[in-house]
Length: 133
Image (cartoon, rainbow, N blue to C red; front, side, top):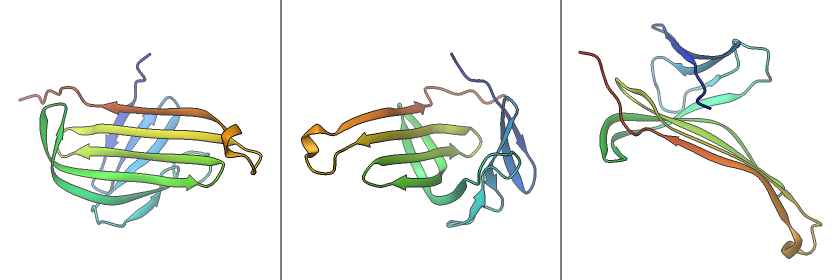
Protein backbone atom coordinates (compact mmCIF):
# COMPACT_ATOMS: atom_id res chain seq x y z
CA UNK A 1 0.00 0.00 0.00
CA UNK A 2 1.30 3.43 -0.95
CA UNK A 3 1.92 5.60 2.10
CA UNK A 4 0.55 9.13 1.81
CA UNK A 5 2.09 12.12 3.48
CA UNK A 6 1.97 15.90 3.32
CA UNK A 7 4.85 18.33 3.01
CA UNK A 8 5.06 21.75 4.61
CA UNK A 9 7.77 24.27 3.78
CA UNK A 10 8.63 27.60 5.37
CA UNK A 11 11.64 29.84 4.89
CA UNK A 12 13.41 28.05 7.77
CA UNK A 13 12.48 24.38 7.32
CA UNK A 14 10.58 21.62 5.53
CA UNK A 15 8.43 19.08 7.38
CA UNK A 16 6.77 15.84 6.34
CA UNK A 17 3.56 14.77 8.06
CA UNK A 18 2.88 11.02 8.03
CA UNK A 19 -0.39 10.32 9.85
CA UNK A 20 -0.01 12.14 13.17
CA UNK A 21 3.78 12.23 12.98
CA UNK A 22 5.63 15.44 12.02
CA UNK A 23 9.21 14.93 10.84
CA UNK A 24 11.64 17.81 10.32
CA UNK A 25 13.32 16.77 7.05
CA UNK A 26 15.25 19.93 6.09
CA UNK A 27 16.64 23.02 7.79
CA UNK A 28 17.42 26.12 5.75
CA UNK A 29 19.84 27.45 4.68
CA UNK A 30 21.34 24.17 3.51
CA UNK A 31 24.91 24.04 4.76
CA UNK A 32 26.90 20.83 4.34
CA UNK A 33 27.46 19.20 7.71
CA UNK A 34 24.41 20.87 9.31
CA UNK A 35 22.64 18.64 11.88
CA UNK A 36 19.17 18.76 13.46
CA UNK A 37 16.68 16.64 15.38
CA UNK A 38 14.27 15.14 12.83
CA UNK A 39 11.85 14.30 15.64
CA UNK A 40 11.77 17.83 17.05
CA UNK A 41 8.01 18.17 16.45
CA UNK A 42 6.90 14.73 17.67
CA UNK A 43 7.25 12.70 20.87
CA UNK A 44 9.70 10.09 19.54
CA UNK A 45 13.31 9.82 20.70
CA UNK A 46 15.74 12.25 19.13
CA UNK A 47 16.90 11.21 15.65
CA UNK A 48 19.76 13.21 14.19
CA UNK A 49 19.50 14.21 10.53
CA UNK A 50 22.40 15.78 8.71
CA UNK A 51 22.98 17.35 5.33
CA UNK A 52 25.85 15.17 4.19
CA UNK A 53 26.47 16.12 0.57
CA UNK A 54 25.19 17.74 -2.56
CA UNK A 55 25.52 16.41 -6.08
CA UNK A 56 25.26 18.70 -9.07
CA UNK A 57 23.88 16.08 -11.47
CA UNK A 58 22.46 12.63 -10.83
CA UNK A 59 20.97 10.06 -13.23
CA UNK A 60 18.06 8.09 -11.75
CA UNK A 61 15.96 5.80 -13.97
CA UNK A 62 16.96 7.69 -17.14
CA UNK A 63 16.08 11.02 -15.47
CA UNK A 64 18.81 13.64 -15.36
CA UNK A 65 18.37 15.54 -12.10
CA UNK A 66 20.16 18.72 -11.00
CA UNK A 67 20.97 20.02 -7.53
CA UNK A 68 20.51 16.79 -5.58
CA UNK A 69 21.16 16.72 -1.83
CA UNK A 70 21.60 13.77 0.53
CA UNK A 71 20.09 13.83 4.02
CA UNK A 72 21.38 11.08 6.31
CA UNK A 73 19.73 9.96 9.50
CA UNK A 74 21.87 8.79 12.38
CA UNK A 75 23.16 5.29 11.76
CA UNK A 76 23.81 2.47 14.16
CA UNK A 77 26.21 -0.14 12.81
CA UNK A 78 27.80 -2.76 15.02
CA UNK A 79 28.34 -6.53 15.14
CA UNK A 80 24.66 -7.35 15.70
CA UNK A 81 22.76 -4.44 14.16
CA UNK A 82 22.82 -2.39 10.98
CA UNK A 83 20.44 0.59 10.98
CA UNK A 84 21.04 2.91 8.01
CA UNK A 85 18.70 5.53 6.53
CA UNK A 86 19.10 8.33 4.00
CA UNK A 87 17.03 10.31 1.50
CA UNK A 88 17.91 12.21 -1.66
CA UNK A 89 16.03 15.34 -2.73
CA UNK A 90 16.20 17.20 -6.04
CA UNK A 91 15.58 20.93 -6.30
CA UNK A 92 12.14 21.69 -7.69
CA UNK A 93 11.04 18.04 -7.40
CA UNK A 94 11.44 16.85 -3.81
CA UNK A 95 12.13 13.32 -2.61
CA UNK A 96 13.67 11.21 -5.39
CA UNK A 97 15.31 8.36 -3.46
CA UNK A 98 14.80 6.78 -0.05
CA UNK A 99 16.92 3.99 1.45
CA UNK A 100 16.31 2.13 4.71
CA UNK A 101 18.16 -0.86 6.10
CA UNK A 102 17.35 -2.52 9.43
CA UNK A 103 19.27 -5.78 9.80
CA UNK A 104 19.82 -7.76 13.01
CA UNK A 105 22.30 -10.62 13.33
CA UNK A 106 21.97 -13.36 15.91
CA UNK A 107 25.36 -14.78 16.66
CA UNK A 108 27.01 -16.95 19.24
CA UNK A 109 30.16 -14.88 18.79
CA UNK A 110 32.21 -17.96 17.99
CA UNK A 111 31.04 -19.64 14.79
CA UNK A 112 30.00 -17.03 12.21
CA UNK A 113 28.66 -19.75 9.90
CA UNK A 114 25.68 -20.09 12.27
CA UNK A 115 24.84 -16.37 12.24
CA UNK A 116 21.25 -15.54 11.32
CA UNK A 117 20.26 -12.24 9.72
CA UNK A 118 16.76 -10.86 9.93
CA UNK A 119 15.24 -7.48 9.17
CA UNK A 120 14.51 -5.53 6.05
CA UNK A 121 16.09 -3.42 3.36
CA UNK A 122 14.04 -1.21 1.09
CA UNK A 123 14.47 1.62 -1.29
CA UNK A 124 12.10 3.89 -3.14
CA UNK A 125 13.26 5.47 -6.39
CA UNK A 126 11.58 8.09 -8.53
CA UNK A 127 10.32 6.80 -11.88
CA UNK A 128 8.81 9.97 -13.30
CA UNK A 129 7.62 13.40 -12.20
CA UNK A 130 5.50 16.27 -13.41
CA UNK A 131 5.90 19.91 -12.51
CA UNK A 132 2.83 22.08 -13.11
CA UNK A 133 3.38 24.95 -15.51
